[in-house]
Image 1 (cartoon, rainbow, N blue to C red):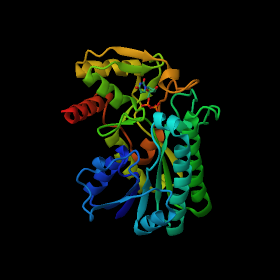
Image 2 (tube, rainbow, N blue to C red):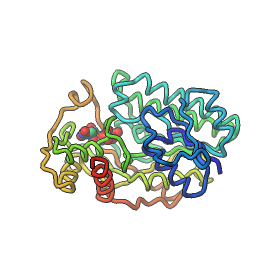
Image 3 (cartoon, rainbow, N blue to C red):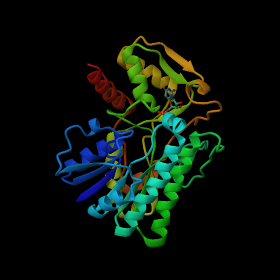
Length: 322
Ligand code: UDP
């Protein structure tokens, strides 16, 4: 098949491209290289099996050409990372809401199956454990910039589901929980690459808040395997599906684990949220996925533990540093 991957030069997108290439598909990547990078596609662009088009998903003509050429569309292009969302709220909202509208319109025009990578941020600050796909979203006030990301992604989900309801456009929505692995940049927040780099450089490991907040980290390889299976799964059309890992860890435990696995003497330093992000910043205290639906639809079972993930990220960062 010929497959369009928007955001294919990003962290998750580039892992997805490698997997699709290994399955013999031809890939068209549409990426504006804003948060993604050419380096992520590292020797893959040969103009035949993989072709890169450097442009924005807000460019209607280009998106129309790409979608028409493709048999199906993985839509990963998006502003990412809490830091970026706080620093560039206009770009975040415009690219997420406007860009997805453009891509979906073209998919609707040419009847191309569409898979959206959404986010666990959509659950907002709900305190339920674990989060199931049909749970309520609990959003903060609009003056808190963080929530613009969750609301924008929720609009994308509404729009995709609307195309399914009105015209049976085959859409699948994957809510990704914290996804980690080699090639993830720590530039826009992302805690694991940041901690690993800090530990390897002997700098303080910066734990925001009091470190009791928890996250569940999934290996990017498990995540992209699931995306491909979900795109192929008929029963997943018109559905929202969580993808992640249910192994929960506090951010303080994560800092300690990184410190021990790297053999670093970095101190662990607590930084208040208002210094790390903005005044009144609201974090999620726990974020755990229910993976029942993914299991039922595609037999999803993550194969990498947190230690596997950390070993991979540490090896990658060590090699890069060398
Ligand atoms: N975090 C941290 N130190 C950092 C970066 C992030 O303690 O240098 C915390 C952040 O406040 C959050 C968790 O780590 O509680 C995960 O942050 P990330 O940005 O990776 O993803 P999020 O789950 O917030 O989208």
